[in-house]
Image (cartoon, rainbow, N blue to C red):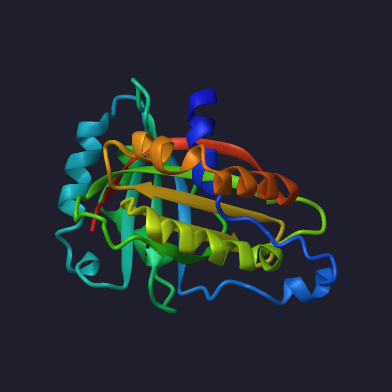
Length: 243
């Protein structure tokens, strides 16, 4: 776990807030991301007697349906990087204003998904934005993803982060690491956010250590981050794009 946090903080620390005390909290609250999609993160657990092969077979049949063969939404599955896997997370990314979530749930049920896994479909809708894409990412369907659940410290919010985010993104564009970031937040819960790191290189930990983690910029941004937010959970996953 300590090793995990060492690398999770690598990039999470990279975005941080401006400590300009002259700005009021009210003014900062007016600064929000330019969200361009919505997400549902659905936590699931395999039922007794079911296994990952059953799930893989179900999903391979599912995505042949025309309902999944357009650009309206994207489905990813996250499996913990552990020896034994009985839990996973669906990430349903909706790229339109159309409400497809209930249709997705109903389709799963009609096709027999309830026999394979038990899921918490009563999950909050998140608004999302891709903050960074290195444009070096391969077309691999399988990548390493890190999901961090974080809280802003009292008096801080996305608005206080904006300038430092831009600074961080400029640094990342120079590092040439195949990587992207997703930022998600519930509409009415501005004190919390979800940050997802997606790594497209098998050697990303070496790249992080060599190119960033011990630099002056990384140390400074780490300190700024701790002033403004705390991550209460960080988990590493094998991530697969299903459609």
